[in-house]
Image 1 (cartoon, rainbow, N blue to C red):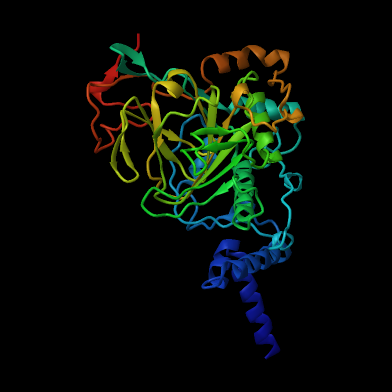
Image 2: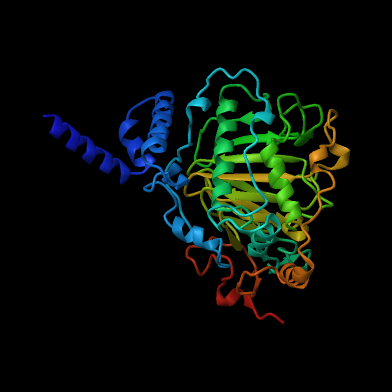
Length: 440
């Protein structure tokens, strides 16, 4: 009897070693409430820590729910190609026993110092390199595309409506993306419990398709429409929201240091968008209470962003426009010039759970009355490579990095129609023959 029990125990442990945390969690947490699910998740985490040493943190998201092409995404950090990816299902958040606390009375941002190194992640390279060598290697892997061209007639003149648009890929690697996503979910839980200032967190009722994305704003209170007090759209100078969390300030420092954002336009506010499947952002031009450039960072699921002087609403959450751009995971899209002020942009209904963080600098004339400059965001010095690498890095920045894209220009035809297939609705680097202009 004892021998049978011992053999069954060994078989059970062998089975556990072949399962990920999430596969175990799926079985144990079926039908439980969210709180009990968190407790089970914490225990499964401890079980792996105790018995399954060496298990990768990649299992935070279940294999059957993670990005279908996640392996390709990991490779994209080493390759200059933009990789398409899809995602389905709700990601799990890694919960430890110390984080299960339903009565945290005061939100103190300083408690959330999640590491975000400027050097290399352990998933990309091993030890043995100096911090400067690590940063140089990561900095050199960033892909930069700045050659977006799409012509439309504006005031009777052929105009490149995408001038000023930039896409920087591989700015945040998969490990960093996970840390940022987990932190966003922590903030969301706090907002749901009333632990953030009232205007910081918003979770509207989903009354129709495309409506209901969760938003969190830090640094300033921004009004999307005239509110109940009669305040117009724009920054509410006496509105109170939470300050930028330390992790978001680290992201800003990374982007300025790595020549993604200019040191003359350091963001001091941000808006976090948490999309469920089907959520969208309708066509708009960002309010001029925020100076240019501003940027959006993408997480969890890739989606397309549309640009055009006239973007049509087809159905709830469905839009059409002349130019579509995929946003890779961990990438930063810079909006400036015509790309920010002439072309409208929108995000159609997303195919899966997605998070974006939009960082913006407020116009000095619109700063909140209680605003004080953050010393952590002052005097950020852009990364300067060792002298032996300066010429190579300067070439890298000037020519748009190491991404090899088709640099064809695009021309919009008269009228704006809905697109029904890939050739009519060109993704990044591709266009129909009728829209293509040879680059001179």
